Length: 55
Image 1: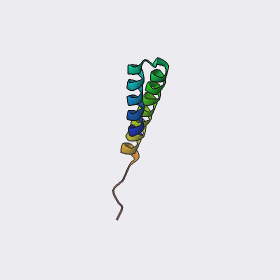
Image 2: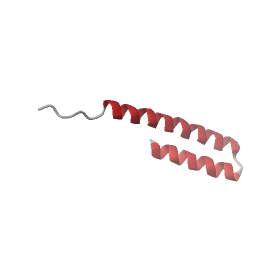
Image 3: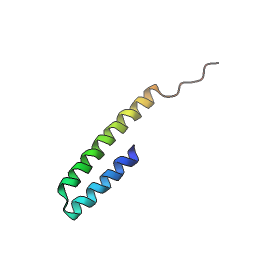
Image 4: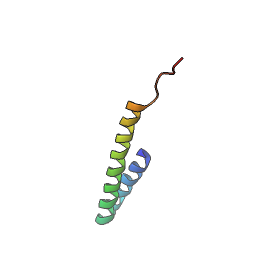
């Protein structure tokens, strides 16, 4: 998911450089949403992740 956030961020930068403001804004919004979803899932994985095996 972090990969796709980076991809949309790069698309936003290229679109903004070429003058496509609407596409740049939409791609930046998608990148921001994906990044925050990644952060939430990462924190949940740290909290509820692997436990020590029970013997």
